[in-house]
Length: 362
Image (cartoon, rainbow, N blue to C red; front, side):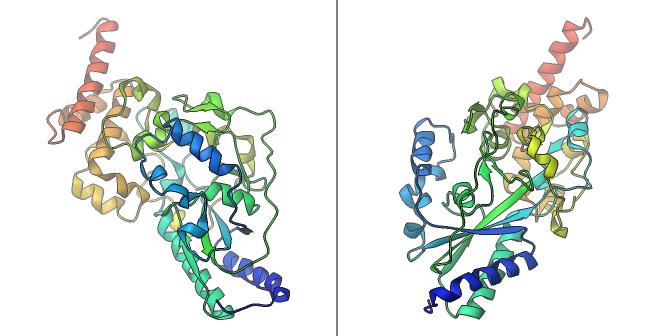
């Protein structure tokens, strides 16, 4: 890295923040690399096995909390925030209340945020290098072992709420964050102070009881983990709580009072694609693997694959009232080539059969 006089670092930071906003980031901040108590919090979370099958959370040892071990030479973490709330989408609560529809977490309605943010961060790094000369850096967007929410809090972007999401006073929690680990000794920002107060609205709002205590999330019960990260069968005890959520879950954010300040996404890539803000479950269940690939390529949903997509939809159909449309959809995949899909279809059909018997008809 080219040596930069300390007197110029504040001006450089202002230049970087301005360039970041021009690239679509709403807010940027700088944190040091000391992990503080967050390292112990992570260790306790892992010891409780609250990460479930996400083995990558424990795989990298101390690199997750020590950026200079992950990228040697790192002295600062530049955190950046980009809003994603799709203001034009169908109201979330309306979709959740209609069992014929599938609910997709609002962050996944547009294009894959990993690519959008990573591209913007890479351009920002190029802009910095054009000013300073060669600079050491590496960008991350959920793509490496970085304790991103803790560093974002330390960079002043927001505080970690009781649901464990990052919350900003001026934007709620409907935003993405990404990081640039750099050897530039930029002036650090003040950490954000917490403003949840006595509010616990997010805890009882979780349909599967995944928020086991304030700031403690058991991912094994979290619908986002179940529908996205879990590869095998969905636990039967939690299937009913999943409702019609087929990719992710937003319930803890929907009840958070700070989200009255949420800002609609400005980036065009976060606009709703393929009607995913209020899709009919039966229609989605009819998608072939080729249809799924054609429509979901470029989406965050792409990574779960067609098989898990059908698994999730089968559970949602089983949780509905058993309309002729839903039953026909389930019957169409009773003999699906995938044993995973067949298992969840059988569960859904048995659920409707039991309801029918309870109501006095077969």
